[in-house]
Image 1 (tube, rainbow, N blue to C red):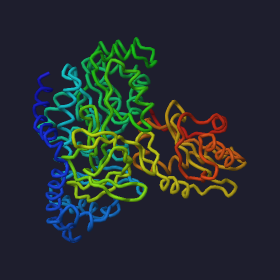
Image 2: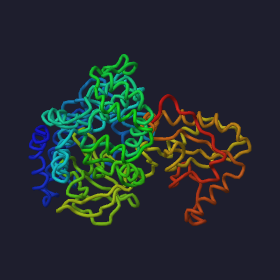
Image 3: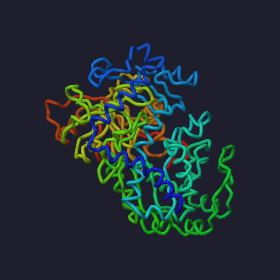
Image 4: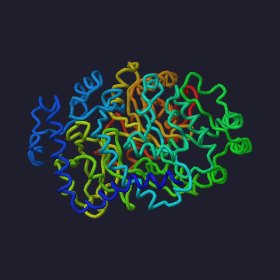
Amino acid sequence: MFGHRLLKLAAWPGERRFAAGRERLESVQRQKQAALLKRVAASPLGHRNGIRGDWSWEAFADRQPVTDYEQWADAITLSREHGDCRLIDSPLVRCQPTSGSTSAIKWIPYTRQFLGELDAAISPWIVDLYRQYPRLVQGRHYWSMSWVPTSLRDNMREDVNDDIQLMSMGKRLLAGATQCVPQDVALARTSDDSLFATLAYLVSDPALSMLSIWSPTFGLGMLRAMAQWREELAEVLNSGSWGNRMLGGAVDSCPWSPQAAALLREWDGRLNADFLMALWPKLALVSAWDTAASTPWAKELHALLPQAAFQGKGLWATEGVVTIPYAGRYPLAYRSHVYEFQDPTDGRIFAPWELEAGQQVMPLLSTGSGLLRYRLKDLVEVDDFVGGIPSLRFLGRAGTTDLVGEKMTAAAVDGAMAALALPEELLPVCTVAVDQSAQGLPGYVLLLEGENPAVAQHIAVQMESALQLHFHYQLARNLGQLAPLRCVIHPGMRERYLQHCRQRGMIEGNIKMESLQYWAGRVPTWLEARSAQTEAPGVTV
């Protein structure tokens, strides 16, 4: 397709710069830091904090402390209220929502400078995609939206949850021409309607050649929703009208495909590779997370779509990009932000050119949004080098459980427990994250010690409500990626918990009670018979 050639051509200069500088990591990073500090020093917050535009790398590391979101929250609030960025001298384009460990939602300034940094990571990735998977040019692509919960949609701008908006204007126009799902689908009033419209366009397009999502559980959820809604989807595709869907929304056009409608009506709803091969015969690539807790779900998704190759995502956060898929590895996006890395065991900080193979570290980002030495709570391991650029493998969230991107922390669980007002006779033991909780989905199980299992259902509902105050947990539940929370009450729960820890290989003297743990695999059989679960609200996928 002509649009693919133009997009690759537009991204080519960025890829050339990325490739050409791979042996000059230190000089590129020092130059980026010098340019960034000049912009920060010219901002109201930078001036107030005494940031100097002439600081060296070493002076910056010595005088600027490592930060978390709380250090920037007040300035970001002012930026949102006044429509300008107080953190850096660059026009504010929008603020992007994400979650924090101590608050339900945090907002990240997306300035013109910051979006340019993201574009510098996207360009080499796009060129490498077409180089590694040439069949991508034979069809249209789906790049997942950055989904937000239904509760935020009333005041949502169209560019808040559209991944294509991370590109430069020219690339956005070209990428949009290669997409099979129109942008206005992002503006549907509910997550269900957005998902339904997305599926209608995907199912109607036999030329789909790329499926780019973030969590593989979201991809599996989409396929389950397609099975659940197959009759309604068939009706819409056969008539070319939304019917009772999209009422009051901003989605005007509707796909029409009697052929796809017939396929859906002949399908028995059981997910299998043969049906999906017939639906999307040109699918060349599935792109999704495939490391840490996502590994088994990525394998399951790929097994359903064997006609396509599978590529793992690089490490992206709302606050910035760390790695991109490139040349079969995941090198640091060294032309995007300024990077440092912190050892989680002793707190030592390394420049990117100081990293060595085998190190496990947490990234610190200084970006065009004005965040300086911002700590991402992600653990990565240096597994190789691409030229002189370290390649980093994502190991998981540091201090969190992250089954599908919900980023749950012990502090969040403790806060939810504090809101429960448990009866005195019930003692909390642990909340565990498991890969398979209910409905074939990952989820959370609250373990309590006590004699009254009849109240488990009531407590599960309360705990679920409390956890849904946290952005990414609510989002994962809205999208059907997580099962509803379950609650198990047993008079000997503490000993059962300790025994399970022993069976997992933990040393007796090192076992301690924790508010949040991850247990790989299914819910243990000794929990199954006694669990109570919240009811899933509305349509889940």
